[in-house]
Amino acid sequence: MIRTVADLLDAIRRKETAVLAKWNLNHGPMIGNMYEGLTRHLLERAAFDGLDLRVVDGKITNASGELSDQIDCMLVRGEGTPIPYTNSFIYPIGQVLVVIEVKKTLYSTALEDAYDNLSSVVRLHRVRDERFSAARRAFRAITNRDVSSDEWADIPYEDKMLFYCLVQDSLAPLRVIFGYDGFASESGLRNAFLDYLERQLPPRTAQSSLEPDKPVRGFGPNALPNLIVCAERVLVKLNGLPYSGHFAGELPSALQGKRDNWWTLYGSANGTPIRFLLEVFWTRLRDLFPMSPEIFGEDLEMEPITPLLFARPIAGRGWEYVEHRLSERAIGETERDTSWQPCVLDMVQFTMINLLCSDGEIDIDGDTDLHQFLSKNGLGVEAFIERMKSTGLVHLYARRRMRLITENCTTAILADGTFVAGENSTGRLTRWVVRWQDEFRARAPRAVE
Image (cartoon, rainbow, N blue to C red):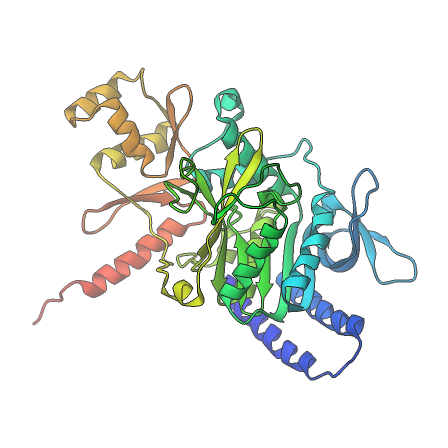
């Protein structure tokens, strides 16, 4: 479904943009109003009926009465306060789902202006006593680990920093910069964003490291826009909602002695920008409302994303960044596998994943049956733990309890005897197995009469 809707809205975007371009108006605000109106039209078509969602412009307020800057386009729920003698509204931040800053032409100056405008929304949000389920799911996707209240005291401070960042991001309105024209290449958009970040920081200590001597407020991972669109190109935050940037084992471009524990925070892509907008937007709707996962379609092909910015949590200091600059040619030559694959398991992994699916957890040190099983298979306890963690499906809690980090893990045995497992809460693994079986039958030799 999402691909069909994305294709439809993208066709509307292209057609209407061409129509607007023919209007020769020498009045900046009026031109801006046209493109803001088109953006509201697209967002209205992307929203679902029956949820009391509305697309408006105006300002956002918080419990203290603070106001954001003027917002071009925002998706809200329920009624707001009309601003007298205008078509604009003031909405409490808790009712705002998406905020879009619209630019007819997106170059460096417009990018900075849009970022500043969206920053006024970030400053309004304060985390209160709210549910953190979306942040926890994002944390699992990024780290292949888990966080829980019963082991919070034992969790490394850097993991707490990441989780708190994801909590803020999952509860704040989605922030989008939407440019209809501008940078002519993906590398141009990438470099402009990196240049903007560099201008906010003190002089660098190395060619590739954006490491400030003192923390700079307003530019942490949670403050960065969720999506930046420029014509056919996008920059997207890989915060697990839904796109996930994993932690790199080692980052050669980082400073000596600081090359591990880097999160791929931001990436770029070239293609259908509306598809990225829908993925981010509909993921937020799914977190807020009971919606069928079928809206995302088969979900077996992922958008090709090239890493742009890496982030590393530093206890007591904040975050440091490392940029990843590439030429347009290098971007085109980057290998980007877009097909989703389940985890392939060996017999030990398959047996234990199934046990976790039925029993919930394994007591690593106290389960005598486990020790006998490992002995028969020639495995020590620590080697077994590493083998299980390599699947990305389990987490070892501080009290040496192993549990799944999936919402609905499912295993399967393929026709060729291969063991596989994966997250199946949306039916993705089931769809993958069906596709694999169809392809397997097509490859199988047929009897000749």
